[in-house]
Length: 471
Image 1 (tube, rainbow, N blue to C red):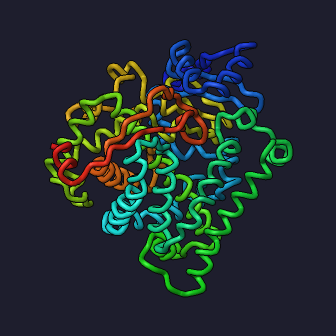
Image 2 (image 1 turned 60 degrees about the vertical axis):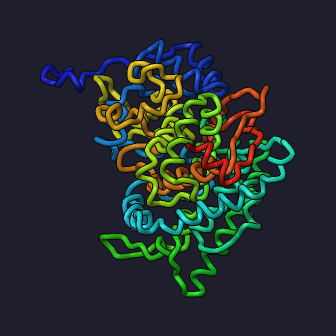
């Protein structure tokens, strides 16, 4: 080794499982990845190497290491792993899944669509559609019937998102979207054994049970989106919705707009990535607040002080600080996007360890959000972790429910605004209580889902009760 080489570039063997422990680890990673990844960190430290059948995977648990991959040297780490290939098979090469050179012009075309001024209609739609959906729950509230809220939030979030995206009502198609997206999970689940082993895609599609059923349902959804885009282009009316603004977006260097195929990929990306994050976070927020009654009490007091019983607006959100902290703490403990990975284009060095070319680098958002070195009482639900005072010195890559670095989710601002307005509206209309006897278990798939759903009973609040409950 060259004596003049800096310590940062000296190559040490990355610790991790060896021999038969690798096979046991693969099975554990497939069956209970959340627990196993944390076991890796506890046993081996903040960087762990593990040889999979067709790839070498390096797990990172140190925020500085993660910052190196997602910020400082992000161009060396691309989305060319088996998990991203499975994702691209479904949604194409949209902003979430593409790499350079396609990524930068796509980001430039899309970014302006998510500026605050462009989200006024989205905010109004979020509140109006939440109120409309809540009216459908009145019978269940009156009769004491339990409801499964995650599916309700799927329908509600898709309704809001498709109206914001397309500027038109396609409510009759929403159930088809929900079916297609549910069927998609088994195929693109990053921790499913077939995606960990990562065989050739053609072989996987041939041998995987249920792939044909999934493909048919997803083609129905793709066709619906294609029809909307085709109609928009044929009509010549661009529109002032998200789709219209994206259609008008231009690459800063070439001045070109998106092709029809790019528009389709981006629309599918927004639908898939956008609706489920919102639905899961709202569902988990209800469960966490039920476990921490003081948190719910404090939030209702804030809503009562700021809103005084009226519907929330976009302009109220800066004053609803505790509301945002509740959602942030919900996403810390139960991040819908619970992990991500990249492939190294060239050899690199992180913390004195050599990252080989073509190695996959895996980041467990779930595990970093619980790292005991950086979070006090990490399993406790405590929204006050996110006060300005307690957050000011926190490394950015310790809290990353929307990713981090230049590739951080372009729709983050819209997603947070939508969730804040929806939760504020929900809590002014109902009290939500979990059905006893249903275990709170997590199921890591493409996103982090509750294994048993989110079952609640509802107590409807009239205007007077809502104001009293919130004050």
